[in-house]
Length: 406
Image (cartoon, rainbow, N blue to C red; front, side, top):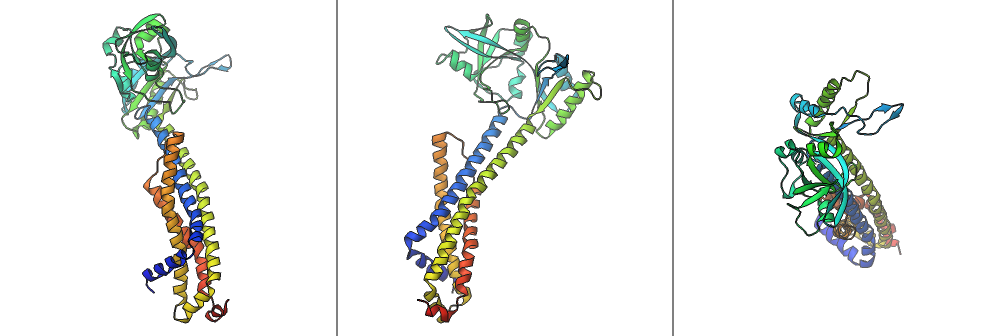
């Protein structure tokens, strides 16, 4: 018999027991749908994590003032005062893998506009900070180097500060008070969301010239951090080594002594987040695949019942010339048709489930063509694997005994 004839016979046999065939396919439909939806959730979480890390900026390294031990007590991050502006200048001058850098200081304060007030983080830096962080502006523009040189009272606010202080009012050109000092709002930053490293709201911030922060608010002469952009992601690891060696030399740290600074590479964090997300996606895939295995067992069970019910039919087919190979192909085709049809319906069920999850739970769900193809191929494999034994059993029936079967 040709393949087309085998498929036609298998389809007619399945159509004779429509309800049983539908119930058998249901296990495959649920399994494929679960695989697609769960993998979509995992991939969506992976993409969300990468977006949050990318929001920090491209090829970013974070150089921070480190810890120090006082009286046997280890102080926390930012306890040292050895990271200075000249360190940043030296990094730009002597580290070939570094493309740009911006200094930073920080404090917190209550900010007032009209009858509204908001407690937020105040960051001091220079204009190149926005380029290093790849942080776009929603309105307005960054302050200039002239503002830094003159320690001007100008401020750029994040989206969270804008919502809480201004609401529907346009903040550009308005005057806010920070620690009883008047500041003119010159820009509003585009929203970035939560930080991938700390979970803090990146939009809950006000950015001023670093000279303004140091001279008029904190009195500090050192830097809390330096944010650095490497020439490429691959060169970020080279830049990390160059910066560490340079700062140890500049701070006269001897061999064996702890650094009084730290260098954090965002590429490391991105790789770690990617590995964790891939592990999470793989785990969800195998959990959902259990449903496919259960569906495959259901196919095997129904096919064994079908062989028993159609024993006499098998004997007649063999008696009029059907070979063992023809019988085996027929029952194996029936199993494949069941699993493949269930797999195709399961794809649509999985896509619908993914859409419902996205709309109701507001989770990012990303369904890739590879996940769909893998689910369909896996469902076919289940049909072949679990359909082989019943098909082999049918093919090995003795024609004479089969004809006698009642």
